[in-house]
Length: 162
Picture 1 (cartoon, rainbow, N blue to C red):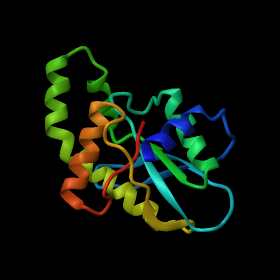
Picture 2 (cartoon, rainbow, N blue to C red):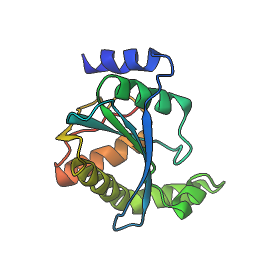
Picture 3 (cartoon, helix red, strand yellow):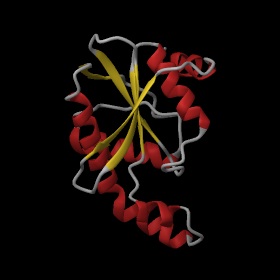
C-alpha cells in the first residue's frame, strides 16, 4: 500500500505548498533543510526525504514528492546530509576517494539524519511520528544512510525517499 501511495504522489502535478528554509544544528555542522509543510495547524506526521548521490541538488522528482506529501497532509523534510567537502568529493572525478569517503563518513551521515529527525519531532506541528517507507526505492547512498541510521538508533524505524 505504501508503495502505491508513493507512486501516486509522484504523479500529482506541482502542488503549491508552504516551503520553509531552516538550518538545523548537528554535531557534524549545520544542515540546510527545506520543509514542505502540509496546510493547517493540526499535528501531522513527517517524512524525511533522503537524497542519493545527488546531495544538495535534488532531482525534480524529490521536490514533486515533497509537494505531493504536503498536499496529502504530511510534512516533507528535504535536505542533504553531505558537508560541502563531502559534496565536492562525491562529485569529483576520483572514484577511489568517493568510495573511501562513503566508507568513512557513513556513521556521521547516519547520525546527521537522526539529529534532523529529532529536530523535526520538536516542531509545533509534529504529531511525533514519521511515515514508514519503502527501502526498495531510491538510490544506494540514501538507502545505505537510512539503513545505518535505523540500525544504530531505532528512533526512526524507516524513512521514505524516492
